[in-house]
Image (tube, rainbow, N blue to C red; front, side, top):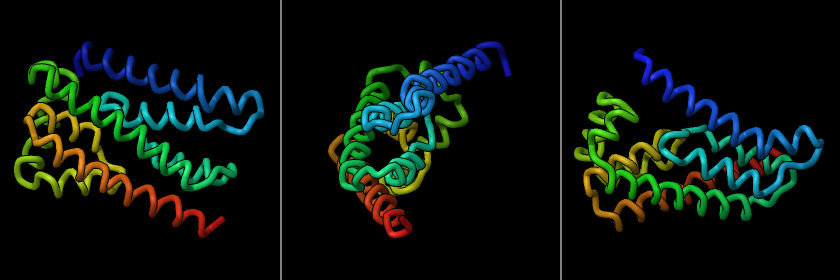
Length: 173
């Protein structure tokens, strides 16, 4: 790895640690129940293409803290959709060279092939599972993929994922 790549990873790591520290970490240190604000901030951050985090784990954790599934699903959907629209818009506005430098040529080509070959189905599947849907959103924007289709299939996948996750986990509580 070159120095630039190491620097990008270091900054990303520091951003993740910072977001977690000022939200959930602060609540834990103060021995308070995590707040819906911390859920929203972490979840939103995890759907930005440069801070890809496994935010799906937040739903079972917050359910176990006593929050209602419907509220968590709503917040997860709103924060994920807003972040993915930002990812798509950045991809639409920023040059291919900048994106290559941020996520790497190999990753870019991989996601480009997936979108060109599978389109809406890829967007749906990547949003159904804890895959890199934020990066796919960024590339969809770069490729000028139809925004209405992108939005429809992203939201559909997210609704299914978080509904199954929240209500499936609720059965075990």
